[in-house]
Length: 64
Image (cartoon, rainbow, N blue to C red; front, side, top):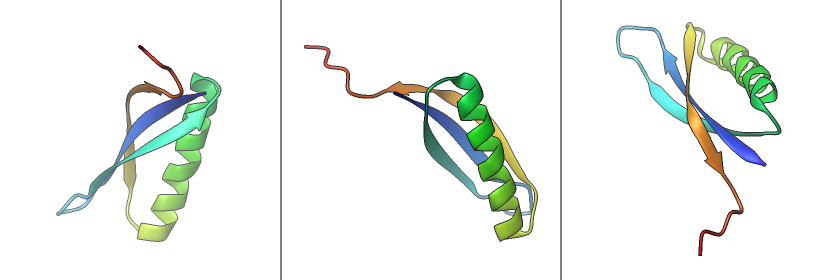
């Protein structure tokens, strides 16, 4: 399973930025989960939240 990394940012005078690694089977699954997290954070914080895709992390892979 891959981890899709997204950057979340609040849109206000002093922006807050954080990253979330979302485990998902595919890109569409990851985007749907990120969209749901964005809605959840928007309700919790009471300010608009932006999402930006950063990349993919692969888990459980041995390179040696």
